[in-house]
Length: 167
Image (cartoon, rainbow, N blue to C red):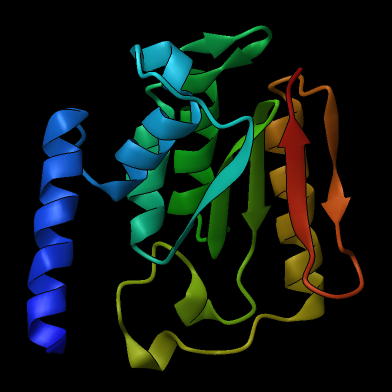
């Protein structure tokens, strides 16, 4: 029974991607959230898409679809996110809308959690608090260069992540 359901879900996903001319689920999600940019009959004004690991790159690519929204420039954010990814500073990435564009970047706790991790078990180690502090500083610095209206570390005591929002 599960196999039949999996096949049905794959067929539904295939049709959604074809209908919206999307490469993958991340691109589809960005198009759905920013529906008014893509002549879709719907837009979602309060939602984010979340990616981990190697899927972070797919979400970064999808963000480039949003050329501009007031002061937000998609290509500029993509350039910064690719740089952060290449440096191993992203574990989790969220992008979407809180009426206007928003991005959340969470750095890894362990080296193997980085979105650019290549799978070498000998490189797996816990990232020190000092290293994480430096990661947060670099993420904040890079995102701040894009002039968001709000930028800060959200949930600093529990599961911290950098939030940047453009109005």
